[in-house]
Image (cartoon, rainbow, N blue to C red; front, side, top):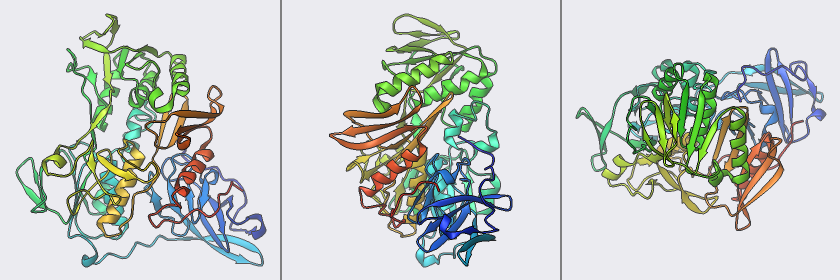
Length: 524
């Protein structure tokens, strides 16, 4: 789901278009010079913004207008039509905008509006310093959001990784498959952090948080105080505890270094065994298939992904992998690994030059526990993502928050959720008191198909399928006691956006000050 450019279509908006051609709530695809632009009408106001989502290049003209926002159909990034600013990740850069003028019933978009930086917050409006523990998507987005909101104080990010924050979905998808450069796999360049005054300290471990003194201690014994602290330590792969699991050809995938190591090994290997039929395991199987390997997947379950996506979709996913030569060993576990093979619990031996383990992750909560923060299968936070300790927030894979959509406290291990929580936590560090109420969203790409999933349903008891899974054209609803909690779509991106708004409207619209839905619109 990537695009390098948007083809210029529709009218040249600099020459004008009849106002009557754009009904209220609709958008018109056009261009200004060599830039693809969508022209959106909301009541008496007109907005002209770039037609390409800055995340992966999604076509915004195929997205959805909700209030004064526009949403990308691919990965549900949300932008303000009025300012172009990113309201919700996974996009990180604002949309370009053009000034719209109306004369004699004709609307013209000619002059591009230069982005103005937000006024710098005064020291009385913000913490004296912000420390971020973790170099993943939540921590990175928090740092970016602080600067975008006008915070001028020192920001320091402590990352145990050797590389700058990475676009983690890419590590098991395009980067691992050789379709994306390492530069594209990073969320930002080193220049970005330098230019924005964000001090990123790599290969650095925080060993202790002193909530009484509002300080942290590093592995080298040094200490640093904070005005506000974000815990974004993420999750750690569950290790396979069998003989041979520590051999050199056994790998896990969590960081950019991990993905680099897999690529290097795949270039020399002939056979690979993936232990775990989860999202990460199946995405790795898909990406490694381009390296011309014989690939085997070992999983405890009878049907891959059935617990999350249901048996029908899980069986389809298996069939797609099998069409690409992947061999499944389901209902099985690995009991030992040697230099040449993986042995299963039924005695079968599978040749393996490369073994990748993807059997789940655990939230990295050790620091939080030692600091005395409240823990319940993750770090408990309130609706503002603040922990039980004042001035300490948590976001991403470690955070368990009160989800208003399900009415339960949930923890979600999704990249987009982590980034959105980083945004909200950053704003709340600045005193915004913004509740986190975003609808969870994730996507997976395996071989030649993709699935987008909106919502959260751990214990669905009914599945409704509209369309055909086999034809890759469907919407799948997950219900609990008759209430729809989540939706998965294939080749129905617009329906995925509509489901997201439906879940939001069930709460009366987003509660965090963002524009509320007034009218849903199809593309003009």
